[in-house]
Image 1 (cartoon, rainbow, N blue to C red):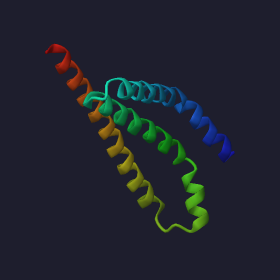
Image 2: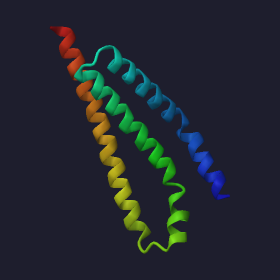
Image 3: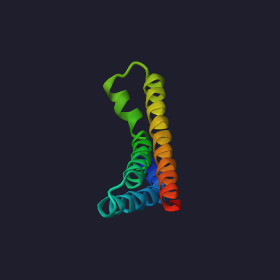
Amino acid sequence: MIALNIWSTLLVRLPMLAAYAVGVLVGLALVVRRRDAAAWLALIGFGLLLATQLGGWLMNALPLWLASGGAYSLAGVFTCLNVVFSLCSAGGALCLAAALWIGVARSET
């Protein structure tokens, strides 16, 4: 039953994972082709967002793993991980916004 839940949440996250993976590939192509700050920021931003999606999916298996190891405070562990994932998502969004800003500013000059 738990394994079905883990795989079903992966299925729900699959469109976002695919979109972020395509963004990482495009960012990588831009870095190889242009090697400027906007390309690097786009690659970092999409990479952070992809890592956040993957980490959120792996958090579904975390309660079983922590319970088997005798963790004392599951709520504390989940709170810390949610803070880390939120910071990574915010950092990714800021990197993408900065990449867009730099790209638009460069095209205007």
